[in-house]
Image: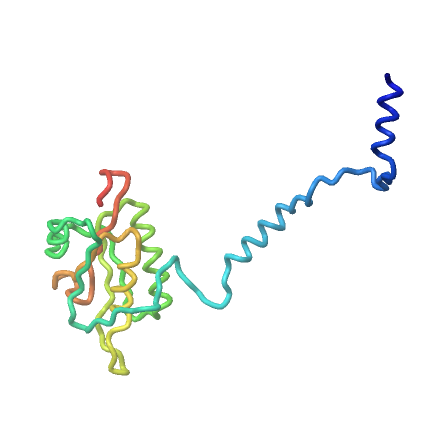
Length: 185
């Protein structure tokens, strides 16, 4: 019976050439993890344009020197916005962006808001100034701050300050808190 199996096998493999390589093909080689990590990191760095944490200057809302600023994210209660506007929510931190270049102001504003969020601060004041530019155009920092605050994920709303805190040259900014007293949305 063994002879029958052997002869049957020989007849089935007649004309087949043996393989020259005695190693199995295990697919493509595994990538070098360090090289892949280095490539990923290099791909995330842009050398030509400096972008700070998603705050865009692509479309800046132009505002006048005396224009009051007022904005609230959808879902923020009107009573909270009213209290903010009346200065009834005390601010626990203040930032002055007077005279700064736009790029520097953006970096400092982002860092300031990140720190305030980390400390679970409810309200801060940002002084942007309202001076007209020499070229006759609208105030640059005020217009940019108005645009940036709308983009920041932790900002629930903002409004121009009471006169004693800077009037239309500053804003109260209400921030989202997540840990101390539940969510503020």
